[in-house]
Image 1 (cartoon, rainbow, N blue to C red):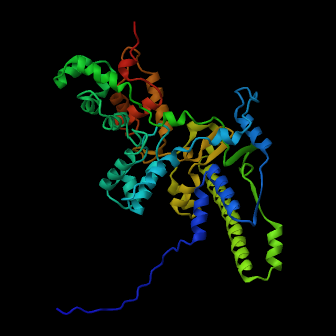
Image 2 (cartoon, one colour; image 1 turned 180 degrees about the horizontal axis):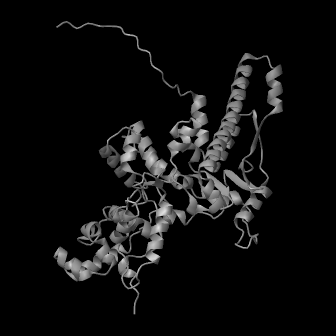
Image 3 (tube, rainbow, N blue to C red; image 1 turned 60 degrees about the vertical axis):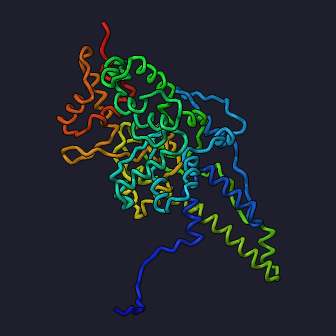
Length: 444
């Protein structure tokens, strides 16, 4: 067979990521702190950019409002340097993203998946996303997703990215060398029995001594069931929101909060020099810097426009929250907002990343408004918040002498058209701070 060379023409549509577009996307994903730092870095490198500092009194007033007590009284003990108080600790996402950047063996697509996982960690540091949905979203296998979850779970702090308490503790134990014998096995198979104090039963099942079981439990109690707690405890209570939503005469008004950021203008001296200077080299340099300054201003403007549109859509989709509070949140996906605004899903993800909204119901992250739903037998989708309230109500009505197990609660929910697994009931019960049935028995 003879080899031959053929020339073929192929027409493809590709999105060209220009430096301007890349900067615009970068600015969109910035937190307020990161955007402020970026503006100052650009100003230091560009003589045409002048900055006007923000009015600190407005910022302090916002902090006082956030620090108001239930009665509305204000606490005037606000730090002199609110900026330092707010941002002396790196965000959790940035800490994990730095570790992700050090993973040189991952492809670009694999890093995007890990970043997606990072953005779906809950306040405890547990992974809160469906692995099948994630695999479908990125067109990869479930096995590949599991592999990348393991990458996330290798990051610090130990236990990050776990799907449940057992996995969180196991991830910490495997990194240590001084764990008592049988610790890993007992965590994976008998954690509930250990918590209930059934030491002799566990000992008999595992053919070990009760003393060994107690030693394992003592060791487990030194582990951290909330891997992000140490980082989160360092955070300050004052938050400068990116968006402010206020109610006025029954209507909700959206404000993009830029009062914290320095205002950008063009240096008049260099602007005049650009008009009068005839030197080709100087002209070229000043034109380049002027273009950079305008691109920065346009990038910030586009960030605000996109943030406003996404917030407006959140307000429309989650209007019951603004009327009744967090219990009234309904299921909402990034895809729902992206489709409504004719944006790419990744653009919405960048928009809500590390952003806060101040509302009449409190200051919350934008991610709070995106709630995964549970499909009922009727075909309707209910939010986990609704299901938690159902579980709470069921437990409140139970016989105090015969508390309901998680499986029995799951059966009751199923009878009401909510097909919830026992482990999901256990997860929601724990998040509500309600102990296991064996610990809810009323002592006589």
